[in-house]
Length: 77
Image (cartoon, helix red, strand yellow):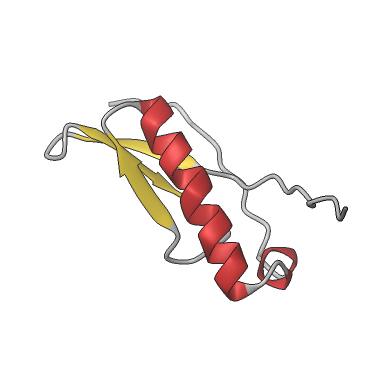
């Protein structure tokens, strides 16, 4: 039996006030997004979207993806 490979993919969650839920995007995979009413649901849906994306685009797409660094900074108002 062939063992499935695993990969870690960065997912950003952003709360959307109009949708009243979360939008999940995988910045390493252009156009790969999902959503959910809770953060947990958005992440679960993002996992499915990423799997489908990589199945269609090929796992090579993830290896060729640019490095993404996400930071949170504090600014004065």
